Figure 1 (spheres, rainbow, N blue to C red):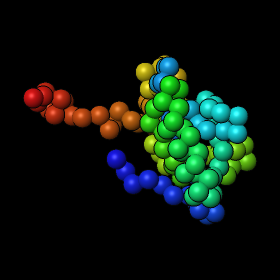
Figure 2: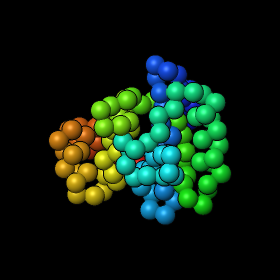
Figure 3: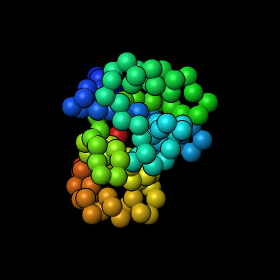
Length: 121
């Protein structure tokens, strides 16, 4: 697991997880969990962020894998800073729309070579 992210004024964070019911990515908002990442609460205070994370972890009947991740303030709300989070926002990669996006991003080039696929233990 990567090192937990601690938000600051210059590098705020959002709280994200996966919905237990369907596995989709969700973000913590003032009104609960939302599938809209732009609606996510931006935390710049470490204590507030940690309190929200503890609340999220206590909601094991709703979400799994809660964590804080760096984000930035955008014109329409929270925006991802890292590629992984931008990719997560596009939805499950098995859906047709996500497959189209993956092709546009040349994600296929990240697939293992044919030689490495043939050597399973």
